[in-house]
Length: 357
Image 1: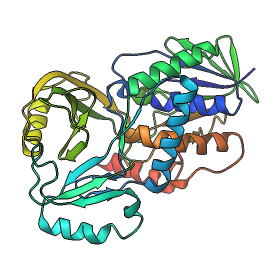
Image 2 (image 1 turned 90 degrees about the vertical axis):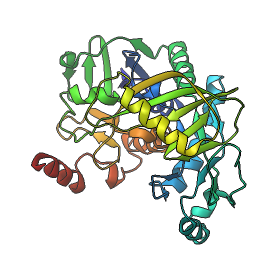
Image 3 (image 1 turned 180 degrees about the vertical axis):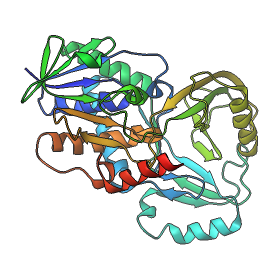
Image 4 (image 1 turned 45 degrees about the vertical axis):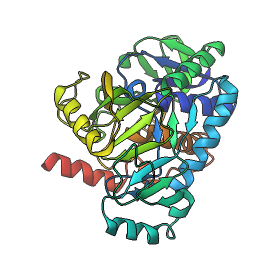
């Protein structure tokens, strides 16, 4: 009998599988390997300071050090190089913002993520930078396609990977296990991304799916910093960069739109001084949640069925640490944070608010 069946091999499923294998557990991952999953389209940026107001991300002081150690260890295990630490430059929009940041860096852990506060001469030939800005550290990106491919190869070597669509009504429950087709496991964990909306065990959770679109561009010269204000400019080798991203909660198709391209190019013009050529345009759907916290835990009625999902735009940074927390919980070595539990009061209130809106 297997210890765990895992459904889905995006960022969430891959990292959970690797954590369980590291603990010596027997697993099989079932994956449909669709082309337009969020993991395959996402840029993989990790960044402790986010949003228009440039605030510290949830649990950043724990997540960022953990993720770099995790991915570096996995590079050795999987025999591939997919983690790319890069500094990130975020220009200030006003002199007042510059003044506030000179105080902010001394408070609440911000200093550990700040490389420098710079003046308006920093990269002025590349970006619009009237008021200086902040250069962040513990930032960079994960080459997600390479990571997923390396993980899939590793799983295959360990006879732990099956490609195909999962059929929910073929699950059979027993007192201490589940059976799926010819496989028996102590638990089955769903890591399906947006497919969770169709999952009869978890379609009641308040997901808020969001479409994101990206542009791939050619620049006249290489850059060695991620620029981020309004849009991000992520160097991905040679003279190439990825530009993103948009947020659309209404159009949930995987078809790129002219509207999104125009939005990205308009914002890019306000940030980047360099000329560019658009060579590709992609779209994907993120498995986001109403309260921007993942869904982690076991089903309230079916204790052999679990979920690790809802990582949204921050899967690369959330999944390593939270997967270890979840594995500890599954192995009876720890509790889940209230913020990610399926039955928290806060989430019940969000469900009520959604029904009324």
